[in-house]
Length: 73
Image (tube, rainbow, N blue to C red; front, top):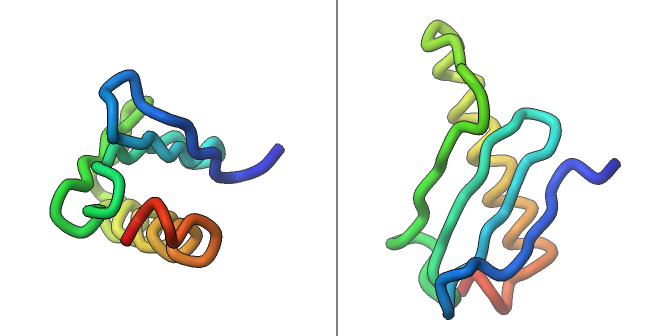
């Protein structure tokens, strides 16, 4: 299983990227990732692990930049 998947959103012009291992997703507008990103948790998350959540979000952003630059910027 791949960690990240990306697919078009139901909302035209937007994308959904999902971290299938850590169960978070990010919805963002095409070519406007930095200003429109919205992360959502797909299951309960222990707030004591907030640092891990920030790491997962950064790793997703890195993956998107490396693999889907044309959608992000």
